[in-house]
Image (cartoon, rainbow, N blue to C red):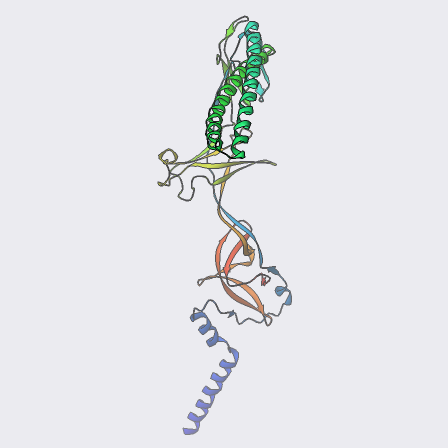
Length: 376
């Protein structure tokens, strides 16, 4: 009986020794998993027999990292714009339309033929007055400049008259500058009126002031006089498009640059805009709204209104940031990590991630520039 118990004890010890030799890393792995020291390397206890799996690498590099807030909004357009007589001087008489309903028009395309009559006596009068005022201004300026030079010379020479010369110089200079400005503004106004009349005299047509389709044309008969800003028709336009996000987004601050992108078959369209209405209560009342409005300076008139658009606003912009391709960063229940080759074994290195975009992940801590990380 004693012999049998001795044999059983020996068998039990041998079995435990065998199990320990078959699973040498079990206790080590459990300790490594449970210590939660993510800054240390975590060995996966896996011998890599296939060397090729260690050759699939990505390099940690420095560069400019950007990530974006993206959404798919519904654009709204300033669909209609009035067509009107843009000639503000003379008598503008309608002759005939050069465009018809449904025509596409670019800026400057002919809309209708006109005849313009101007007051030729007014043109001659303005021309004479401009010449007279220029001559008088020249004489006045010459006289004042001579006196100013005289006072300046006396002052620079010193003596008992120096202070009086300085006083006279300052007074004359002030009145001279004021008079010069007033006369120049008067001449410029006459010149602008003269130029408008001469330009109008040569006009033979009115042109479109915006791109779009002609939606409606007023029934105007030949010989009818068009008043300044007189209504002619309506053009359907999409160059004043905007984006409005219902209820807005806290991230979209006033003044942020926005990019609108549309993919239409093989064609990609882009437009740069700006957030013009924010939820930020620190802004002036005129800039606060229940929605975020994004306007586009160059317009979105060439966008297809039947296709979706994507709005992108830069959320993060970092110069000289450490980053690596997205496919090289993994995660488990503990944190994000990359894989590194340590003595022929794939080794987890836990990292702190700042963000990611379509291609790259920005890494704040855990690796350095030039490190090679492995792919699964």
